[in-house]
Image 1 (cartoon, rainbow, N blue to C red):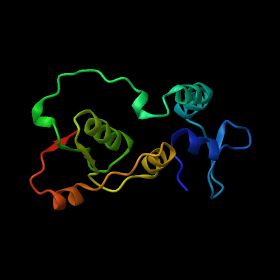
Image 2 (cartoon, one colour):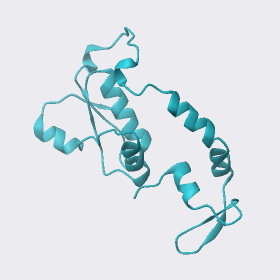
Image 3 (tube, rainbow, N blue to C red):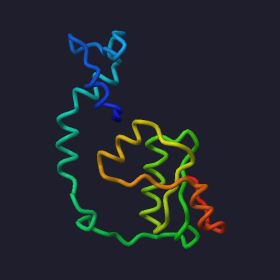
Image 4 (cartoon, rainbow, N blue to C red):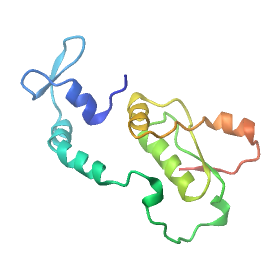
Length: 139
């Protein structure tokens, strides 16, 4: 069971809703960031619900795309987290390439990929076994 960000803050809501209560009983005050995230939860859900459900409904735009990046493998930084994986997936989609992971993902990233039905990219080692001459781009 994965929990990340606002979902984790909601799961750990303390009795007064101003604190977080961990599974081992430890109680601590919410941070300002957690409070702000939870205050905007409804707006975030409305925004997410307004996004197109099918990728084919998103308009395409002609962009300048350097040939050197076409069909490259895009990989994020080590200690892979959501921005690392998201950057690799986005760049791979933009440049018709392939996303790869630099290391194992954390629970927040696993939660996000599962929540939005995005397949977990293979590791860079797996990609290079398949194609040792692949062009690699760090995102």
